[in-house]
Length: 392
Image (tube, rainbow, N blue to C red; front, side, top):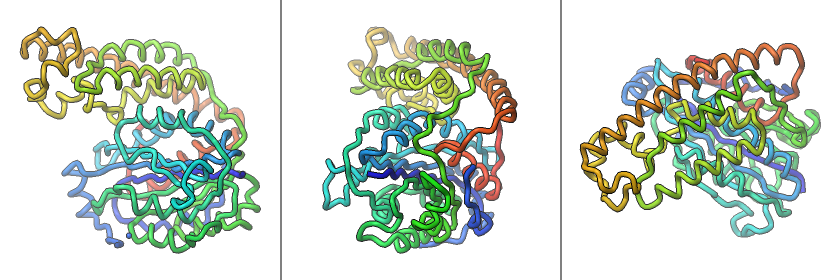
């Protein structure tokens, strides 16, 4: 089977027509008019979000594209975290689908929602690494329709929503017309971008560019079988060392706290297994506000709820805190919070130097577009048109 993968992203901002992006052919359900006042109100109220849904085809030939997704997850996250709107950092949520797998139900068009939109980035990584390929039929119209209808897209008028769908099967397969599905997405202010895995002209002939045109998005083409090219920097080792240190500042709580902390370590291992550069990218993500774990980490929980300690049962605390008083627990958590802030600051400073190094090295050699590069490039372009600033 040929491959298909879809990324859906919701960024936030002011009103925008994407017509300027419609001609991009890159190698490299009710519509609400978005007003500037509504956008300003959203930013003040802290309602802005970046929502990204990854919908991956897990048919037999999907392996290369899945590897690119694994390799670029944290890089895409870090690109999203550079976006600010009126000086504020939007929340980031990511969801995951798989489709095109013979192991899935034909009644569901071989589509399965793996996770809903969530801020739990470790969960996304876990599920992404667990995907397995198995034959299948890839229905672009059906997966776009499911992403539009089933995911909890932000309803605030300041939200901007982008869909990225990539693959190399004909775009018009299946019983759901892709033009109708995309038009439905557009009525919900969701803009569709397409990434064809193969020759650019073939993508045009198999309706991938038409999908982007209908969706007021951009059309790209990539080699999905190409390994992601990394630039190793002098800062990667120290950033990785900081990652080990920052993990000691997480204090698990709740019925799933221990399990979640263990998963954090497992996703470190998954990232490191891809490459040292990918491991550094993940560590950089931990220095960002987007990487938050208030559902299981006391440090993050207390940032959102100052009274959280008094609400947590003794049996839900880690062993080292079960026999401590509330005041003692608070002191302990505050200590870990300060430690984390110091480590995050160091990672952030190193990350800037690292990115400068990568940018300079990239100028020396021409790199071919991969899935992450295509998505990152278009996200930044759309964000700038929407009035976002990019802070590296």
